[in-house]
Image (tube, rainbow, N blue to C red):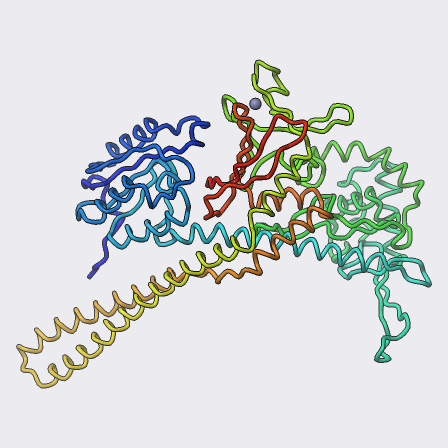
Length: 575
Ligand SMILES: [Zn+2]
């Protein structure tokens, strides 16, 4: 028994829909979003998918007026809810349904309850189950990313403090733990007592004579002087029955690692920390940006002398550089660029765009001492590429950061938190209502089953057959209820309530990171908040498109001196 409408029904079946197209003032700046283009996409999709449009509305929606006031929008919603045939509300892209995500969620939920699904014909459609999750995702991703950036920042700071302490007797640095490089061994030294009278134990590296000798043979004797390949070195080591760092046979990767460490100066006393870590977005182990590394010289005893290192770098360095083909970190160069606005946004799209003609990006440029952004088309092709170039001072970055900070006033934060948590409460309530309903049905099923069992006991042979049939259908119903309950728990909103302090801390972290973070931190934190920046050379205006933003208001960030650019329009929400 399946009481649920199966959404995977055959496409051949006729379905009914309403359709809406919308443009707003800022859309005039972009291509392919005209009402005609939207209508064309929707009609094509409908024909392809056997969908009949019963009512449609295409309107020009001027900026910053709440969609709720738009009569055409409300009429279409009402129609969709009341005409029982309608199962789809068609738009070209989800952003065409409602301006703010908040409005979208509220009406999408209303439609969902009436059995109408919003369908965007030109972009992937999220499951309606998670529709408000889509918005919440925006918030929680923002929150999580900001937090991990902050944690990384503080960890680095803490490590730096620890390793900058040097041992009074040996002059070497204290280590943060982790296995020593092959050739060294950990030595625990007692350095006085703590306040409770317990020995203070610190960790330093000393040379492991035997292994240190092998490092010298590998790197200096064979790799540097005899110009042996790693393969030859491997075969020699294994031929000598010298155990590898982990015991057993030597592999090329281990030898390569020792040679690279030697080139980096680790065997000449240089210590590195914070070079690898889990990818922030949940990937595997990877190399961090070199700017995040903590590098300390004379941190431990020398196995390879500075003179030998010079020779090694000169002899073997260029070849290693070539082999890698990248900057050796696996991190694209511009991720740590001093140009905070160049490159891509969090979704992998151009971040800082010039809207003159085809969409193109701004790139950093330097002429003498003057640092500025210029659109890449002008930079590459001159006026033929972009005929309205804007030169934007690098200091514009500060205005962007200020726009973020000013955006989140206490009042706005409170409003945001209320909206998010209010929506969350509605969702939780929906969930518990549905759960109660299923539990009630299950109780009923149990009671009926019991009654039926009693009846079967006292029934005659013929009656038994009929009753057993009924019992079977009750059992089937029970299975269906259990399955529904299971599905419901999967749908349960997993998002935790938002606190004002979360957002406030995040705002504080921007200021901190902008003061003393790495370029990568700065680039990341800006991209946590801002989807993109669009420069309109026609009006000489910067439009900052924020993520997850329920506030359709303008922000004035002031004029830029010496620049033909004004920024005042911070209200866009483009996802
Ligand atoms: Zn341009």
